[in-house]
Length: 123
Picture 1 (cartoon, helix red, strand yellow):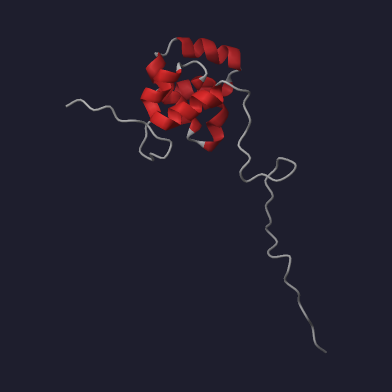
Picture 2 (picture 1 turned 90 degrees about the vertical axis):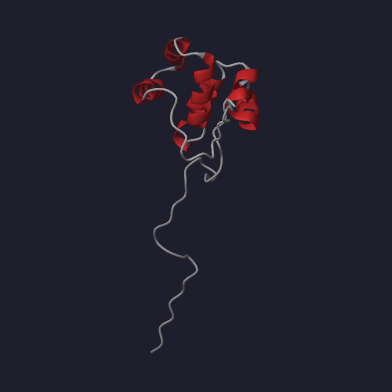
């Protein structure tokens, strides 16, 4: 029986469907040049690539841009419900995920310990 495995952003064993060089070029190029690069990749492979890219926090936006080159049905076949969500995201202006960010858009990191610690000295 020939079963198609749905891709998932939660699958840690998921391999990238294109070469690392192609991913590197996508990450470094502007959106118009990326479109030209993607033209040579079959749509089913682009859909799997979109899911793979979106599943990594540092390549969310590229994944959404790649998904914009795919039909909804192709994304659904590649990733089920995740494909549906990715299709919807790719049809509206990109908004970076807000988790872990505060106010200014920068992560707030404290290396100084707790602010509530008070030292009392007795003489």
